[in-house]
Image 1 (spheres, rainbow, N blue to C red):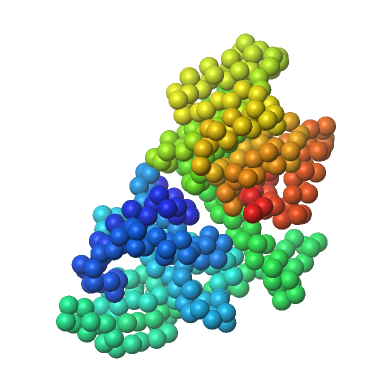
Image 2 (image 1 turned 90 degrees about the horizontal axis):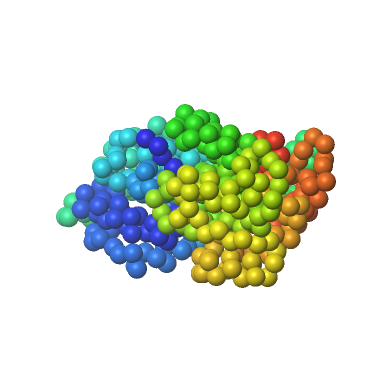
Length: 408
């Protein structure tokens, strides 16, 4: 199964509640005795934070087929490092490894969230869930006999728990980080390491899928970016919550990769590409007219209708206004910068529309000869990382920086 685990958004809530309500009559999973509604659960959903107590969905073929959330075990600060897990899977997709994948991801990511212990509250008669947690090393930490009344039957509650492995307490070799001395620095650093490993694993998984060969053809025809970067653009466009904005579309390689990702997400997302155009001699151009070739290439790949193409320089007021008009109330979940060296300038033009955690793809960050374009690009990015506005997840291919927006 092609399974994607991503942060849940409010648009997922109807599917989440449908999966949850299907378990109520079974009297196996939840202590709720009556189905709930989206409206009733909206405050509960909004109480989650992607960087503290996240809420994830498992998606296959654009359909939400399972979910997992972290919750505070107890409100006192001393219990901050302990979280309760809840895992639910669509009844049509059980026994196919969905719950296992969600739980595996939760255990792997817990340390980067500052979580040192995970617990599950499971009915004693729910043997499938007990076995799933036991398979991952959870032990019985508590037992409350006959505390639940389900249709006149008294049911036991079992508390299972797992102490999470302590992540590395240091950053790069030349910049040691002490957990005790700088707790505010440690959590983002550990999270970055976890996200880097996750992206590496994601790239390896995509190499076994048909989209890999499709993007290889796009790379050879339309793009100057490395294949790994096009795969990440596809992946981020597929999983991100929000719109996609690309600055510097050139002849459309990254635009097409993003459009493929939006298509495979089976969700409506705005895809906006900015390109000033011009005439230049280049091996990727057939007519020497950038805009003409861009529009032709989008049409050839049948993604023209998915892309809002804005002709102009990204920093011109009329272009900024056109982007904001195209976005409407939507925010940006993926920003692709591949124009000139003014990376900070472009980010400042649109930062008020970036969601916290917005994926960032910034080309020309690092090249062997430190050319005129890459040197100021790198200076801009490094300054934003140092200020805490950007979170670095490394660079891929030949010169492309990948990270997330943390400016808010």
